[in-house]
Image 1 (spheres, helix red, strand yellow):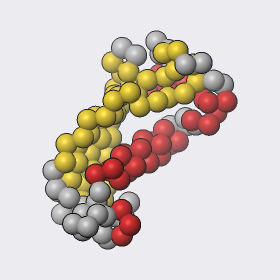
Image 2 (spheres, rainbow, N blue to C red):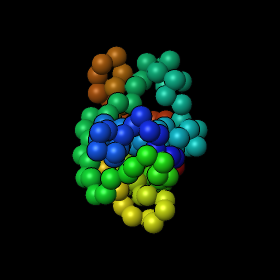
Image 3 (cartoon, rainbow, N blue to C red):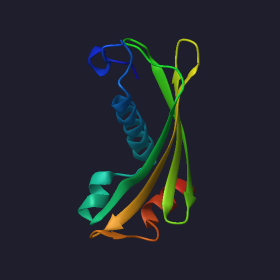
Image 4 (spheres, rainbow, N blue to C red):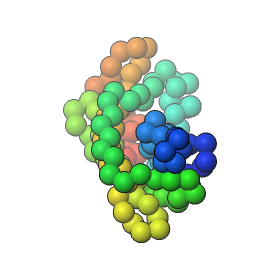
Length: 123
């Protein structure tokens, strides 16, 4: 991905809130690649939602920087844990490390597991 001018603050660096957009986009692309559609899940009444995010900022990205977002996912009890990192493409330096905890809910109630995610992500 590439940083756009409007994502930067007065200091000329990416505003911290925009990193969440980058992380979310990477998760969505990852899930699509694994045949998982949030829209189809939602139509069945199941929603995967973020329960917690922890972000560690390392070096800032600036307008025009290209970056790579990497992720791994694991399951801990009812949570799907996405470990994500954003690297500046020009030099491979780590810009951000994040842990995103997600859960599935149906009709507002926490599900112990999401069969579709379990099957498509973990076989």
